[in-house]
Image (cartoon, rainbow, N blue to C red; front, side, top):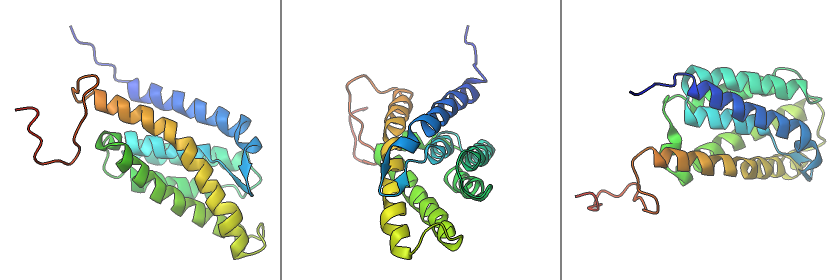
Length: 186
């Protein structure tokens, strides 16, 4: 008898959300590069958008952004708006995009994360938090993106491995993503 666990995605999202919240509150303020800090709310929104997508990605992006805004000294609603749009754009396909492979998920997250970081820090420049455009780009955007991207790597690695094991791959076998001439399954 097979039992369908209909709440598995919700439980996983809550566990990942709790991990990211604890890391955002306990670890992120103490690890900085220049004036940049890791954004675990962005990591959470990216993980949910790439793993499930759809309405859940938009809602989780908004909640993660709102929690980020409430725990920092920034205007309330700015990161919530950016992560809502980020969740919508990355999760528009409503499928597990970690199944496409490690590089594909990193590329999707990287482009979106860089866009969010640039928009966020440019808004901070307009609000007078930063002094110049070079300060924003060199000391805030690039370090924040680098730390956030590094924080995303373990999540992506484990979720790609979990998605790959669901495709019936044998342990230790290699997959040829994108190869039309793969004859190993003949």
